[in-house]
Amino acid sequence: MTTIDEKEAISLPQENGLAIINSKAPFSSTHGKDALDIALIFGSFEQNVSLFFQGDGVYQLIAQQDGSLLSVKDYLKTFSAFEFYDIEDIYVCQQSLANRQLGENFHISDVQVLPSIEFGAALNRHQHVLRF
Amino acid sequence: MATLHLVRQSAFATNDFAQCLSVLEHQDSIVLMDDGCYNLKHALMDSLIKRVDGTVNIHVMTSHAKARAIETITTIKHIEMKDVVELTFNHSKVITWQ
Amino acid sequence: MKTLAVVITTPPYSPLTTTAIAYVEAALVSGIDIIGIFFYQDGVLHANNDIHIASDEYQAIEQWQRLHQEYQLPLHICITAAEKHGIACDSIDNEKVNEAFTVSGLGELVELTTKASRLVQF
Image (tube, rainbow over all chains, first blue to last red; front, top):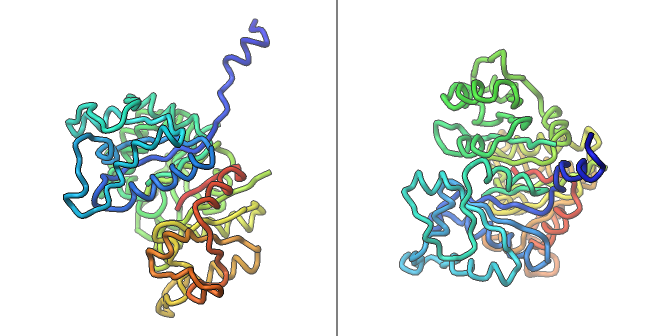
């Protein structure tokens, strides 16, 4: 027989905040920047927002990129401001990296690389999801 | 409560459906709408149906499938837009894969 | 309380928008309280007064105007995205902006998501 405490411990955690899934590569569409703009506004309003990178979206995190060579605004540099905006939870799909033969050489720190099940579970801990 | 996934793209054209499947959990529901209806004939759908063994609810928008002359499958529920609205509130959140 | 916020990212001439409007209308008809529609990316084009869709095609903009009138449905466009799409939002009367729409910013999206029990993206 479970006690009240045990029952509370096994109940599902409250779903909280916004999750933004980034699924596109950085430089051939504006989806990455459009998603970033939303993330930063949520951060500046002190609302919980977490970032997820899946599919070609993982390319947004790879180090040594240089958007200036394309005359494209290098919004990737703004990722270094995540901490300042209290955007702390950044998740990357391990399978997406593996499919693209990518290592974990990212241009920002504190990125959590998760296998699919954990990636999905982390997504599920949020109340709302947008995907770009 | 579970998640409702709105799948709007063909797996023959994009990776959106595959990405949806990788985060799918038991008790989640999928609604195939727009070009997502084409996924009924994709290998991913077969393997999904086998894998989940009924723990994931799969629906297709009747009008969207019919418009595309896509045959019905008895294991898949055919629904209208008002059902999608109802599903929205029977699930804790909605993720759109487009 | 069943409250809903919807984000629209597809333009008026896209067939994908027809699905979105059908969803929004089905929700309104069933009594769901849609606290706002937020138009982002190409979705801001719905507010562009200079867009004319051929009369034998689906009139997305008319549908939004109708839903706005019938249900007092708030329609917000993101100002930055609007200007990028050729909808000037810098004058007092904003004659380029369809009057059913309100020029807002991403802050409005924050408002809508914090208040709505469900958020759906199209």
